[in-house]
Length: 167
Image (cartoon, rainbow, N blue to C red; front, side, top):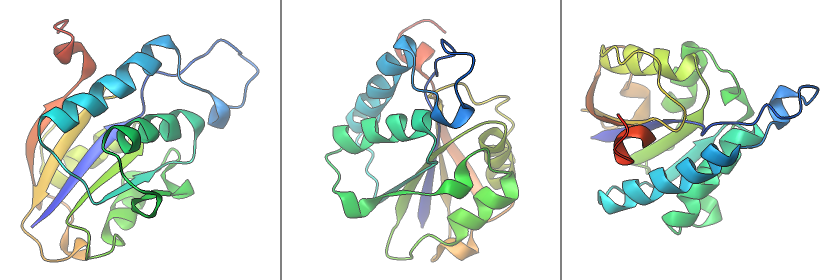
């Protein structure tokens, strides 16, 4: 069994219109939502063996909230530049290359690729994965390279608005 968590980065700032997209930080809401979702994840009793994040500032900041809340050490946390605005095909390749001693992994990245990845892996159309939205997909597979199109089951989908009672 393999479990994949897909997390879209928290809300980012557009305060500096000349800032490079890759370097945009989290805005105030993003700074609230990332720790909120990480805490909710922990309270659900979920665990992860590996976090793989886009190297964009907003994704990295989101991923670090999970790393901190779950008290993960550095060798279970890595950056993957290919996840920056990755296509669903690239996301599937990154996931297939996860080490097989890892049973449960999280990717943190960007739309539209992540929303498409949820559909690709699970056949479930959740629409657009909102900022800091998080899904769990389970695969009946002994290795990550055995994951792929329509082979996963969407177990749950959570987002900050529901946790805050706003949606």
